[in-house]
Length: 395
Ligand SMILES: Cc1ncc(COP(=O)(O)O)c(C=O)c1O
Image (cartoon, rainbow, N blue to C red; front, side, top):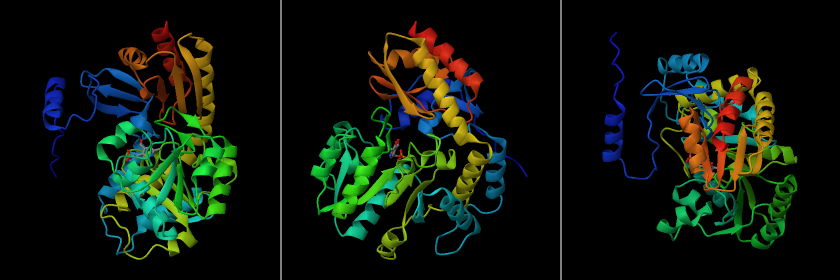
């Protein structure tokens, strides 16, 4: 058997191909990442970077994990695609694995291929179950770029070019229960919230806010959708909303679930799923055996390697360490587990640039908040490396 070699390209060739053949949607950093190993990434020159972003929260097991790679290679050599009109062993096993981590009462899972798609499914399920289509979401909330998800997303920067959006949405202040109560009425299909806001600047919801949202939903007949696409797993539990002692009607996650293999998950109750007509939603790639194997493997390894506990312990060390730097440029350090935001008194771009020059990759949330979303395998060595680079940059 011959192996088709992976193309190797110099940085300038990569840059010109991407610049000439992609729409200019992303502000690009000036390096090309071509390889990963554990908590580290490597560019075309072989320069090593500490990964403090795991592709916006995806690579929870780190890069090129041997057990994960072996499981996916095995599945590639067995079966990669299988329509949902047939039963499949990997799909069944993924459903069983998800059932073990789902918030209480959520037993019906729909697998898709991305976060935004998982939100689309949640919104359609809510519409089908309630017969309504108005949604209430949070200011600074982010739910994705497809048109339904964009209706729920707050930032005018993302919305404005595409208005009018399909679903009428009201956005109320995050953690403001009275504003939420005032906005939700008998015409509301769903309240959709991130239990920890990510893109908006890393704001954990007050547990009383989540409990209040549950009560408002119950009182009005609206469904509560928890978007844990970013906050899933890395705060130290599969779904942060469960810390409030409640379950949403629909929980959504994606990013970490496949550790890099694309998969989205929308889970709901038996009662809601009964109201979704057969054929009302679907996807060709969703729930394919390869994606399901990625999710089964990631869920198994996160648990067997103690990564939930590690995320809490390393996250606390990281936050304490950043506060201990005592930089006057830092206004606030907040987060949960390995979902951390650092709010600065100035724009974050020079700090992120300085970190990159020192071999550390972190990411922005807002112009003045940068995020740390590392692989959940970080240990003390990576924390020390990060803190040394950050204190150097801030000095
Ligand atoms: C909370 C939240 N919801 C939805 C999305 C959209 O996910 P995707 O980019 O996979 O479509 C994101 C992505 O950053 C997110 O953070």
